[in-house]
Length: 119
Image (cartoon, rainbow, N blue to C red; front, side, top):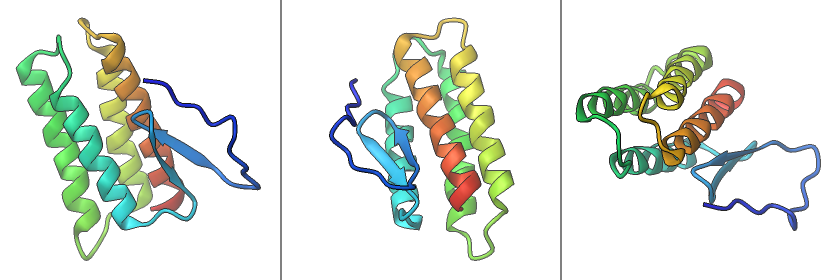
């Protein structure tokens, strides 16, 4: 997966790369976050070489983030970012981690950074 942002014109803006070609900016809202979560969960389901029990546990963590972010009383940004950062770390630390798992971990980490700043 290639992420080419060489032609982008950004002024005082942060862009968080999620899953290669999906990004969140400072102007992104709750629906953009939900779309990114859906994409990340789909990519997790498509990973090869990840034990099914680990995949299920990671998906359950991501499902909790989706539920919490959709609730009327949202948790603090730190709670969401922390949960996403843990998922990212677990993806990157998989013993059988493929390049795709590490890349997905990096995408989840970007999602955590966005949530920490803009949730």
